[in-house]
Amino acid sequence: MKIYRPKGRCNVSGARIKEARVLAGLSQEQLAAKIQLSGLSITQKAISRIETGSRVVADYELEYLADALDVTIYHLLGRE
Image (cartoon, rainbow, N blue to C red; front, side, top):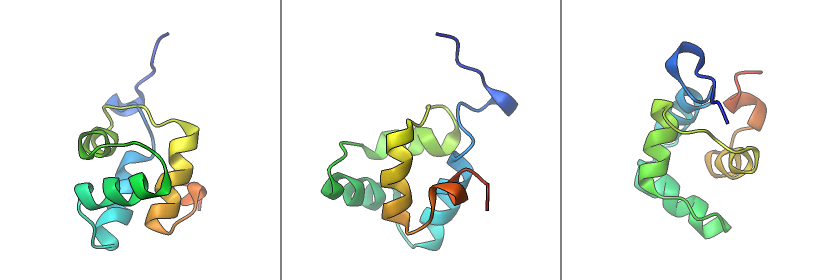
């Protein structure tokens, strides 16, 4: 499967995820732990790769990320 990289990134939500994480006062490790407590196995390394745009974000992961960061999925996608 070919992964398209608009502007060199594998996702459009990474920058918004980082922004929301910093505004929430969370480290990548804290965000990963918060998401793990919700039931999704994700590591600090995965959060880092998402934020830098080197990892694809699955649609179901966006839901966990949005909940943990107290934002909407639309916000993470830059649609609001």
